[in-house]
Length: 594
Image 1 (tube, helix red, strand yellow):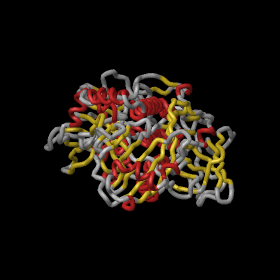
Image 2 (tube, rainbow, N blue to C red; image 1 turned 180 degrees about the vertical axis):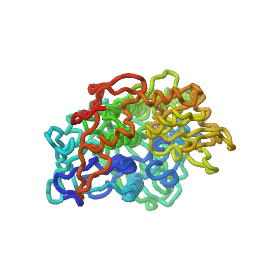
Image 3 (cartoon, rainbow, N blue to C red; image 1 turned 90 degrees about the horizontal axis):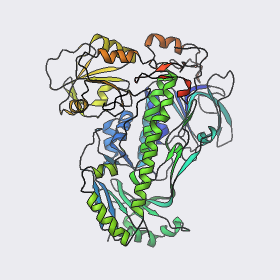
Image 4 (cartoon, helix red, strand yellow; image 1 turned 180 degrees about the horizontal axis):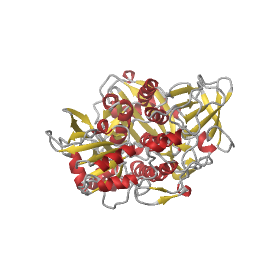
């Protein structure tokens, strides 16, 4: 039995898989007051080398879990990417020249994944609301039981002795990787995007300085494509493509391995290096044909597999968690209508597919063609690197603008669907990062003095109002409105690029709606009042008290719905009406409607 849980107990959310995506999702839910059970078939951290990079947008997501200073201490900035020919001559260089990106962190950040996972688990233990059970695997999911206390019944098995246990959950998050059991249980299939290569990944530690350019080195040699990077002080990673019929043991013989490392280690003696771990990986490009079935969702590698050439595998999984968890928490706590869960796949899948395809394209450019092809490539790439903006387009997996829908207002030239930047601002004489000022929920960022109607609408949405001013000094700002001094002018400039006076920002920092009128937010307030997916506080009590949810200790889980709210007739910021057919998430109501 899982400690603290009896057979048949109910938990608001079951997370299957305790890798970085699963633990991050559990942390995000716990910080929103949602109790979560996390199970993983491994008894402890998975020790093999995997992810080593996050971009500035995903570093910002981690900031919300562990804090910005901790992210900075965990990572080291990378200077970009160099493409090398077979003789290690530079064919092209894609530099990261800005020390800090628009999201408040370096644009490329290297780290050691076990260090990140230990940190995430330590923070998870400090949050409360979460039970993590190792050595437990998912056997089956059932969403068809009549009269069940929660929508999903999970059958779990303790690997050590085979003991089985049933847990009911309001929702299940499948963060269980490429060989996902959750994916199999909902009948989803992985679509092949036609890329598959076997690589040997080697992590090495040394006290010696390799005196190498501090970015990612990609050797574009079809005879032995390779990658090199520094991932932490004294820690380095090499990746080598395996030939057909070749096995890792062929390359791991001491004389052979250090011969492959010699272009970087030069004359440093072999005994100065410690091979920490090595593993064979098959890099694939795949994406699930469906990401959710009613209250079961796929995240991370369970939903998409990305070749590593642009370092976006883990990034995509953490974006999944950031997009889904605030929506799920809002639904479970009666603040949001069930229909919002249907936006998870429609918002995330197109971006994930685009990133996978970009990685495949760059992987083929990086690892194929030599001799005459390499000469042509060197000339072409050298020219393209001098084209303004080309480097950015190659290296970045920038969050694309979300298309108008339930949670994104229409407006072709507006800021809606885009991420708000994260500059430093001054509040009450203190310099702070913008996300720390906006808080964990909805927010309204405005250049105008918010009027009474906008303040009422903000309370309905549970949004914090942040008024942006250009300089410190006396300001006519209503009580309960935060005044932020935009010292560097970043926010003001960003708003004015699309003539925005005020924007509504979602908890995942995506702009939901904007106004260009200086009317104290009267028009924006009217829009907010029309969003029927946002349940007013006065209506939430009825939604959350229809059926108490028993916890493992027998205490009612406060603020968790056992039924839900009807998705029929819900209108979004673009003014459209959506019925149940608009959402893959099934409405599980017992006749309650809004």
